[in-house]
Image 1 (tube, one colour):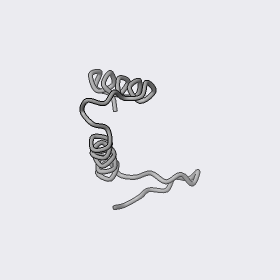
Image 2 (tube, rainbow, N blue to C red):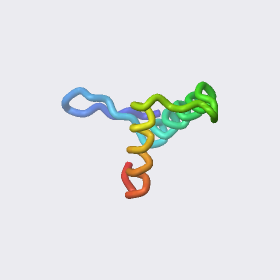
Image 3 (cartoon, rainbow, N blue to C red):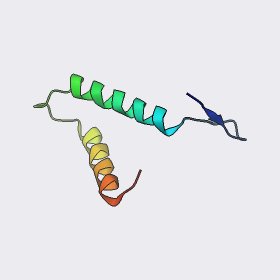
Length: 59
């Protein structure tokens, strides 16, 4: 893994690492929140927002 440090001191990770982190979070959520469980409203709002961005070709 190769991190990049910008002039302002912020650290950025590469796409492969970012994707691995996202996948791990998704797996944990699927495990912890059963298929029949309703998501909390704020989490459902974020999921809906991500789906809209995916449909538009966003990040």
